[in-house]
Image 1 (spheres, rainbow over the protein chains, first blue to last red):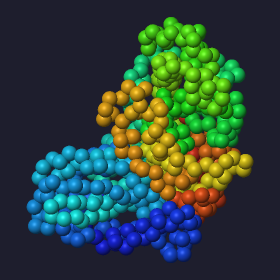
Image 2: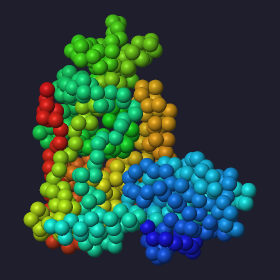
Image 3: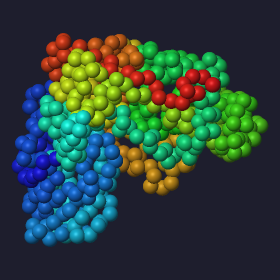
Image 4: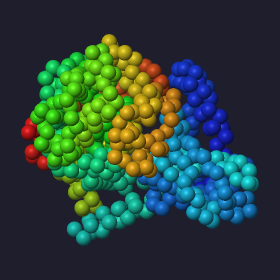
Length: 158
Length: 412
């Protein structure tokens, strides 16, 4: 897993993904849509991949995934994440929702991970994380705290 | 030798240190992938918290007998082994399973399913014991009812049963055929039974499933020539040239490389245990099959799931259900990724036996046609005929038979 941080492609990909999912839900042929508007997401540059630190879309937070062992395929795992605010202080009392998936495959995470224990110092456990396929995954955290709501997307290569 | 061992150690250390995969196409990547696919990584079967007898030897012995007993069917001719034939790697070799009738899907292999969180092509069951109960009450598989099966247990397995599960309930007054099944008479009889009597019958039925599961946990895929290849590579640090043929080795490189097979067929059982739409064509004459999509709600509501009253799991032990993702459009016509171990012995292929040969399967994956419904996850591979032949050769190196105690490899 290579390090690094940035948020550049996130918004565009999200729009594309939402559009594709909306049409899927409406029952239209996904393939025809995809070829029409070309929304198959493009894998980001290698510099976009990694466990972080990664800055949230509106710069409210910086998040760093801190798995106790390397992320692995197939295993149901708990992944700690450390959240700091714009000043670098640990964020306590955060609420975190997890989403994500494989943009190249147009499917979401195989499980629905949830916020688990708060370990203090801005570190939270995310329970029920699984990556089922090799390849590019987006791992998205929607973070809420007294500092406000923001989201951060990690690109992970399994 | 020392040099080889050092190289292997260095490669292993490197593989462990990288959180991500090595660069595809490199020897390091291929080595990493060979180890990840090797049967050495399977490990012991995971616990089944819902079945407290999962590892009970007497339960497995009873399950072995039940697995082969055709009295557990409407016509006295269908046992689990009818479709899960031990002479055929515990499957039947036909496109659609035939019990008392014909099903809409291909029989799945049994070996290694103890490692699978969700069972069936659509994952509508979350344990081996819950899975085993499905066909027993299917109108086209065993075709019987839980009351009938409870009577079979009482008549023929009382001692074996009571040794494991304790006293059988009093079945006097229980109709010969009764259960929540399609047969109108058996269903009506079930609905007339008092709740306590129904629970007693269901309790016996559930234990039949748990005993069969205890047996099935002993059925595992055995090491193949590929595993010898991987083990030798690990031992020496050099890709061996005398275990797999040149075509098989080239097929392995494609499998872990540009054919993208390990996106789904990963890990020591060659499956990620997930569900994907790969654009498999419909089989003529069958009703629309939505695959995983409806089964997500199905397993949540299943009478015998890990959280049900019939499960032995404690609160917090049903992790798979707890973190089960909600149904989504991507699950339309998504089907279970089967293990590829012994795949060459298991024609025909796909969830309704749509392809007869491995070559046909590979042509399908190479072309990546549109899905009949939903969206295929495949992308065209652009492989040559020679490369497809190499991939097939590699797949044939995954045959190793079944690893099980000798007494469990055939009928008792």
